Image: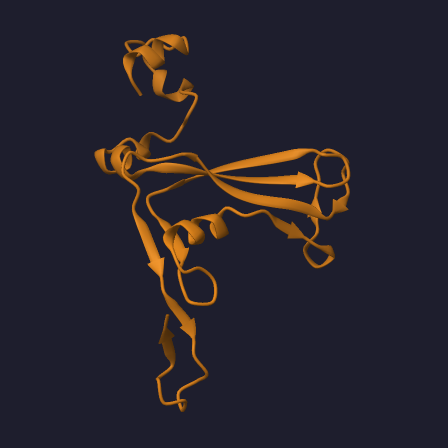
Amino acid sequence: MQDGELKAAGINQHASGWRDRLPIPRLDETTFINRIFGGYLRSQVQCTNCGFCSNTYDPFLDLSLEVSKKSSSSVASAFAEFTRKEQLDSKNRWKCSGCKKHVCAKKQLTVFRPPLSLCIQLKRFTFGGGFGSGGGFWGFG
């Protein structure tokens, strides 16, 4: 964090124990690798019953996007698929903290804070039909 950010948060970095009062307790994510490639994903789950939203923020260093003939044929469409809303149905209900019930919900993963330099891992494999199908176990799109 920059000196200005610490001062704006009311933290005196010359006082002992100031690191314990940081608004973001993830000091191990302040290396130069994390400063360049590190970002945060936001997983948001919204209750379809009462509208309550739950947000969870997770650090990442790269994004794994599925690119194949069946799912996505470009990085842009793979990213759109990565961030599309998912319906949690009756088989995997979510317990809402707002209405205190197990409900169907909508879940979406978004890039909350993008990194300075985004590293993308392209997952290009699809499951092929087994070992005896000529093309090997894995087929590539």
